[in-house]
Length: 214
Image 1 (cartoon, rainbow, N blue to C red):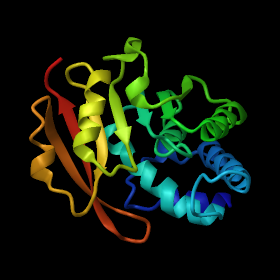
Image 2 (tube, rainbow, N blue to C red):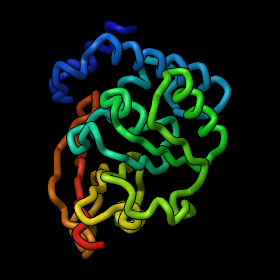
Image 3 (cartoon, rainbow, N blue to C red):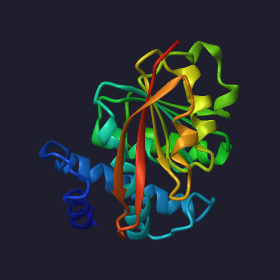
């Protein structure tokens, strides 16, 4: 399995640097996939059941977010589910400070198992909706990431309370979504749109917004 993982990490569409391809990183991805497959037999984490399918569909997609994340960032992953994109980003950037928010208790139990078994430091799992999080978390993050979203304008509205000026919201845009509606949010400026492809060459847009005001 490690050879398959390394081949994926070497895929030029990801643009990873050599330091992201260490044996330890490959091993951690293997541990993560093993746990995901095991837990997937008991609770619904992903529709894909094999490690290869999960690697190609979810891990490949999640790694793309690294383009807008710096190693020392404090990142909030909203609606993390099985840990996407937060856990792959943490594996790539071990020094990342990560908070994953998931409303389903069983999925949080899985995420806590991942953090424990992979001995991940500076990771917090919160069983909550992001809307219900403590005000103590306001303006405390460098970036808020959303992967599986259906309403991008709502994501910007939700993310703004967690970011200071200059903080980022990073999200994938649905292929048919109107970009004009997204850039109409006066609190944010669209700084970059990156065309990305899935492992199976389906194109989408990765958008990075910067908060302009407190």
